[in-house]
Amino acid sequence: FFSDLPVWSWQMITLLVIAGFLVGFINTIAGSGTVITYSLFMMMGLPAGIANGTIRLGVVLQTLVAGLNFRRNNFLDLKKGMKLAVPAVIGSVLGAQIAVSINEEAFRTILALVLIIMLIFIFLEPKRWLKDQMHLIEKKPDAVQILIFLGIGLYGGFIHIGVGILLLSAIVLNAGYNLVKANAIKILIVFLYSPFALAVFMINGHIDYEAGLIAAAGNIVGGLVGSNLAIHKGNNFVRWVLMVGILLFA
Image (tube, rainbow, N blue to C red; front, top):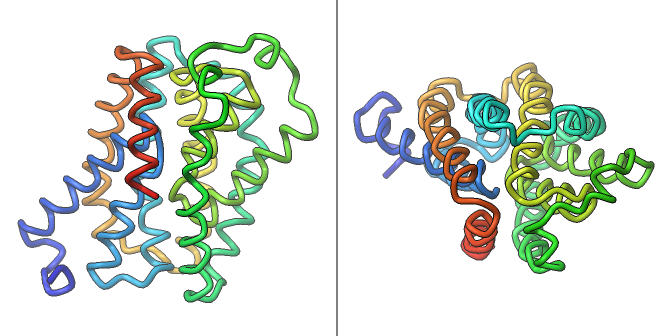
């Protein structure tokens, strides 16, 4: 049905904008929302590789507006976030290059495995998700932390779906921030690495610009609404949204 609708029909525009809004909202508060537009693009007839590249357009724009909102409300530790972003950016370029060259059947298999393992992260020491751990926040990035964020960046460049959960887990459990502040740093990291990954997909012709930009309009609004809710509702709200999101995603 979806593959028979023209991209510029009112039905498809409505679907794409609503899907983009949900992605921007879920990704900003928790993560894994990108599976919505990824699935819709696939139902529209886009190959897995093209769908994987096209979702990046909305990701760049939603993280821009959400990041600015977190920064304006003083929830973003810009200095520490930039340090954590450097290895993630490097990893994302490598991951995107793998994604554009990998066999599509292998790509689907890897995605299925990722869906299965994603659920465990939220259940690791749940109390640590709600309060800052100052000894970790004040600690300078070490080799282990650099490798963690390099690996997450590689995964994010390879397939963006679920990277928000991985980043939140690392920023809370390894870098010591509570969920709202971790969300702000997560948004910054994704915003910084996404243009590099997007460029790789663009160079290799793995972008459907019409569908991607229509959905991106919804991503922008969803990112703004999601960041406002995270700021005003606090850590426990974000934790519950994250748990529900992971369960549904898995």
